[in-house]
Amino acid sequence: MPASKARQPARRPAPKGAALQRQAKTVLRRLLAAYPDAHCALDFRNAYELLVATILSAQCTDKRVNMVTPALFEKYPTPKALAAAPRDDVEAMIRSTGFFRNKAKSLIGMAGAVAGEHGGRIPDTMDALTHLPGVGRKTANVVLGNAFDRNEGIVVDTHVTRLSQRLGLTRARTAVKIEQSLMPLFPQARWTILSHLLIEHGRRVCSARNPRCGECVLADVCPSARL
Image 1 (spheres, rainbow, N blue to C red):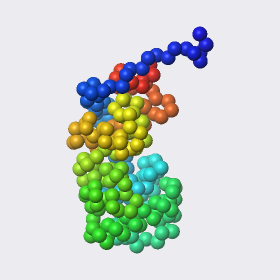
Image 2 (image 1 turned 90 degrees about the vertical axis):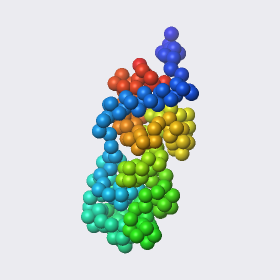
Image 3 (image 1 turned 45 degrees about the horizontal axis):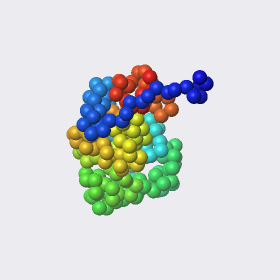
């Protein structure tokens, strides 16, 4: 039989109902065992630094952001200082993170709102955070979960999107709907760590182009496994 017409191995059906709940439980348990040290990859010392770093991380690697932020935080250690920063100076300092003009505008706008409306303190509610310039739900979830230890939602980035779909946890395609699909499947206390676990697994094993299914601790329960 020609290779192009060779029969492909049948994939496991995506779990539904009670099976979906069991799938989620298995995914969480195995990833916790595989990555006991999973954590936020952005370097920060407080909520302000994490918020700045998260804004910078859009379309940029965490590693690059961590190279840029030490100098930025040294020069502008508080929201008040950043709010007064010259735009061209901030742009120059963050240029290597990409989209630096828009990011500089967001950073200075965010800092101005924090300084002027919140007494210089990063707010700790979803509503207040998402009203800051440049801050959407994903960014707010990162800050709430990692700076304030509040599990308001699940961070959905490209890794979480890819893995949740491959593992049969959701059929949703948008970040908001994926988050809504995942939240009922996992204990709220685990929402923040869940993102870190999926991101870590996505970086180490379940990559976008060449997933290493033979090394995956979830291969036997993954509907997308190529074995």
